[in-house]
Amino acid sequence: MSVRYELRCFECDILVRQNEDSYQVSIQSLSNPLGRGNPIADYGTESEAVAAADRFCQLYSLAREHDYFLQGSYFRRGEHSSFSVIQLLESRTSPEELLKLLRQEARSHDLPLPN
Picture (tube, rainbow, N blue to C red):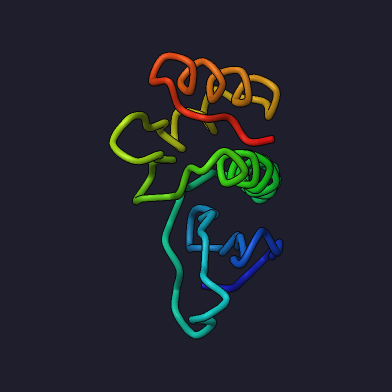
């Protein structure tokens, strides 16, 4: 599995690795650079995987700014709300659309918004 694309995002690297018949987007902690990371999604072409990696970094950054963390394949904020990363990527959710969803969730659960 060779790395075809790498992007620094917060304290992680977002990687696109080539498998035999697909391209895997994964997230890897900088504190464990020898690990394989956690797979996010698989794509049929390198260009699809690179676009998804870029979009994931944008969405991940926005989620982190709103006190969400990545748990498995979900952005979570405490026990109140979660968003499926796979669904966000498959639906090509934009950062603006995710921001709207995050604000709606914060209001519905009476959670503070970042400044």
